[in-house]
Length: 391
Image 1 (cartoon, helix red, strand yellow):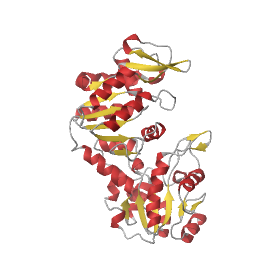
Image 2 (cartoon, helix red, strand yellow):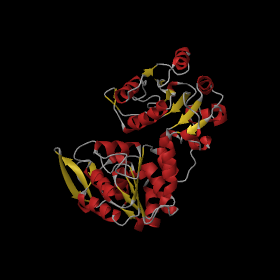
Image 3 (spheres, one colour):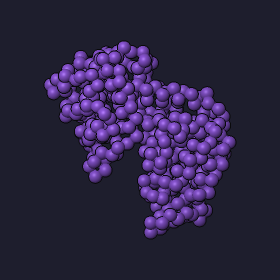
Image 4 (cartoon, helix red, strand yellow):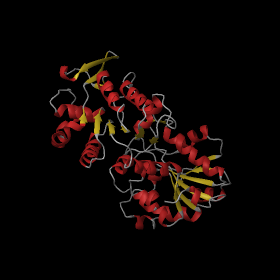
């Protein structure tokens, strides 16, 4: 892929796809690591005299977080000393006129690109390049930069269409993600994977692949996927939300083939009138909802990390948003920070947890990816359409 250093973008109009998708609480958009990290890319472009046109999305059609990007532009304005403009338009006369009037160092945030009918059409990249979205914006901009690795697994017009009609390159965040994930394939062993989060079906796919192909030597579980494995092993967590029955056969198959390479929680934490309580798995069930891994589980994971050459972390190990149920995640991440192993952190929720728990996304680990689904698919060796079109 070409990078920013390969293009003569100085003083030009640059269309850049970033990922500003953020948590929306009580109708307001929260500042997230993604917004902060992408602001640095925008600053680099402005520093080269570019007029920058930003394409980004928020939420999905039909969901409560599917909103305009005016608040996102305001959040960028709070952390950047640049002229930032927002228009509630994407390809119409207002958007085109505003793009043409941009001056050096200006940043224009177009509205939620998923509100344009072309963005989510289920067509191949060749058809995306002929869309009104791609054809219109490419006429008003000189270069296209994709810095949204987190969306590169999606064949959307703003991802796969523009590189087929414009001179294009990878932004710095996308470039670093691709290089780091490639490095994992040659990184030192033993190679351990710590997996949590609240998307157990995705986690099952990851475990099947990384253990089946020998990509890692050990998988340590927390979060929802840890709970489901415990339930399949016969422990009663009393949580009907897990829908363990849907994944039971696949989990049993994994345990039969790779049980010796999987570390399950030994104890769990729950809330008792707001106080953190812990229970050993052999003493289950408990009347309260499980919210975190327990102290013995943390100690076991951290003991393993001491022997690792490479440690990958994806997905919080508990409900970190509720204090003190981020303790399991915080203590494991702290051990990774202090270890001598190569450390790779991935996932949108994980990066949010890092910031919430007081970690430095840029200095505490070898690499932190802001991507979730794309991060996992790339680790599994799948080709991402957004990366392939840049090549």
